Image (tube, rainbow, N blue to C red; front, side):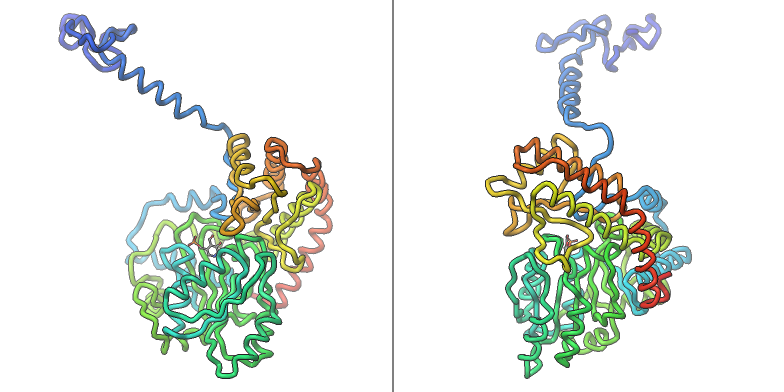
Length: 468
Ligand code: PLP
């Protein structure tokens, strides 16, 4: 088919590519080849575009990409659909109900009856909010080097003009409650104004025991605030803001809550609010008070991330539909199955203390002489799966398997299969069969898992009746 217009109008005869054919434009340039199909002069251009398209699509993989980094996590269809609704007036009546439901849902996830503020920010913004709302320049903060994120939070505190007492660590252990006790006992002048801890160190897969840290602070009789980062544990691992009397809990949207990145949270105790009244670090955007005031009516002091709030409301509904106790038990199973696979491969989990294993991710130590990032690249290229890179001093030495968020047994089976095939493809020395061990556990654990679930539910219900 050459022309679209009647041949009686030669000027209107166009070719396949929407250009005049040679019949109507006989003076095609000697620099261009005519198209062999319709004789127009766009042949070179069209040929170039089709080469470019085929080059770009060579790497396109069929099937679903496996996003197994420890956050951002896979965003479930329910949340994607919720977010795809039209953006509405954030000062109109329809908005307030959505915001209030999202905030109330978050309170249940944090296990608090106190305020939870929502910033349009990443987790780093929520870190900053926790510090600037509670502290003054020159205040001392006790922090612990549990890994990359604890180190970044320390850097931020120092940049804000706080004095940081940074207890060194080996990146394989969580915060030692005895060390917290010792530091606070030593602090006779009560210079330490806050103890700031990363609950789940995403760079190492090590979880600190917040309840035990709380006890250590109480036993020392020290008035320091307790600030906790739950960015990669909230909605995946048991966390109790009120029961553990945490003063500020920091979190973000992109991990256990199953949303895309873009929201940061602070859950705030009464004690933290009182401290904020006299805290003198400069704050404007991060100030809790205008947020808490406007949130009471379901509004925000500035334009909120409306569509992420739709997603947040849906994400919280999903967690509540499943039941928090079940969500935690599910994550524990994935973590246990993963560790069994790692052990069967003859590899080592980075976390050195079984009491501190993370349920949301597992960091795996690469055998000497093998680069974890080379392995990750092979897994990405061959099996279309993203694994977490080693961060900071762990670069090239570990890879991290994220098993949190919207995730099920078969997704874990696929993930571990990708790792096992990748180890073989990368020539890493290992023993085959880790996947089988993990599958055996997942299959046999159904009964045991149900029993544990019932036990956890019972425990959780006793601890916090509102959870059910
Ligand atoms: N804290 C922890 C434990 C994290 O895992 C992350 C990010 O992964 C952050 C803080 C920083 O959060 P963001 O990258 O959203 O600013």
